Image 1 (cartoon, rainbow, N blue to C red):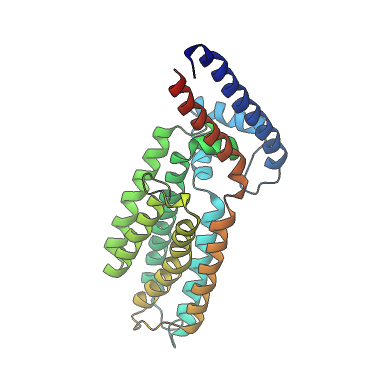
Image 2 (tube, rainbow, N blue to C red; image 1 turned 90 degrees about the vertical axis):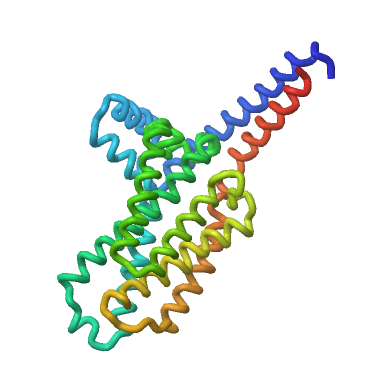
Length: 280
C-alpha cells in the first residue's frame, strides 16, 4: 500500500474505532443502572472523580472500597463463615470448649488476610485491564480515573505484602504456602505474558482453584488448627468445595461475556495500528 494512502487509511481506522466506542457507550449507559456494584450513573462517576481530585478523604476511601470489588468480598466473607461453622460443628465439644478470647482475634486476622488477598487479585486485574474496562466497565475506579494507577499500585502492593506476612505469623506453614499460591494464581490471571484469562480453560481453572478449593479448604483447615483438632476432610466440606469449584468455573466462563464489545474495539484498534505502521 502506498504512503499516499496512509491518511485515508488512518481516517478509516479512527472512524471505525470511534463509532464502536460510541455504540458501546450507548449500550453501557443503558446497562449501568442494572449493576449491583455501586453508583454507575455517568454524572455520579464524574462527581466522584471531582471529589477525589479535590482531596476529600471520604471520596478516596469510597474509591478504594469500589476498587476492592465489594461483591467479591461478600463472597469471601460468606465462604469463611460457612467454613468456620462447619469445622466447629464437625468437631465434638469445639463450641462449648472453645477459647473465644484467642479464637476471635485470630479469626479476625484471618478474615483481614483473605480480604487483602482479594484486593490484590481484583486490583491487579483492574490495573492491567484498564483499557478494556474503559469500554466495558467504566464505573470501575481505575477505568474512570477516580483512582490513579499509582494509588492502585500502592493498594495492590501493600495488600500483596501485608497479607502473606499476617498469614505467616499467625497460621500454619501449609496455609501460608496455599495463600501465596493463591496470590500467584490470581496475579498470573491478569499479568502478561502468562495472563491466563486469555484462555477460557486456564481462566476457569484459575478462578475455580482460588475461589473453589483454596478458600474452602484453607478456612476449614485454619479453624481445625485453631481449636487444636486433628484435620480430617469432612464429606460435607468436600461437597462444598466441589460445588464451589464447579460454580467458580461457570463464573470464569461467563463473567467476561459483557466485555465482548470492548475486546472487539481493542483488537480492532491494535489491528489498525499494526496495519498503519505497515502503511507508513
